[in-house]
Image: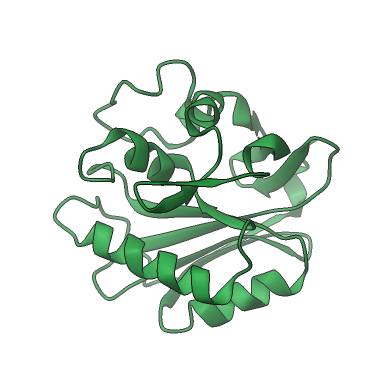
Length: 192
């Protein structure tokens, strides 16, 4: 169950939320992918949410009206968060979110104002990994991350179309012309 009073969010003044259209998004996705491969254990991180949707559905590999690159990390060991911080040391930290003493989100920005947004999931339930955030509680079934695959060169949950249906609903393949925040979270989000 979501507990509202345990979420702490820190937004830094440098945070600028802009659409990805016109930016070198694929190049940045490739750079982040290589950084993650070098510094994080395989099987514990993946491209998620709108980025997974873009990788599967969009010819350009990303949704132009999206505002960030989404990755998720399964925090199997506490030091994975520290690995990620070291991995992203050349980026500007623009947002942090905590549930108690656990990191739930770290958002970084490159010099082109592309936000790379990491959500951290913890093993708190039998069949799900869980993230508590300012929108509610996100649950990802463990079955989607047990044998992840690369689609168009990027690691995503598997089977990816089933994951996208879980995350966005049965009409996930139909583009929507604007980002609606957490309104599209499908079965994954228990709202606060």
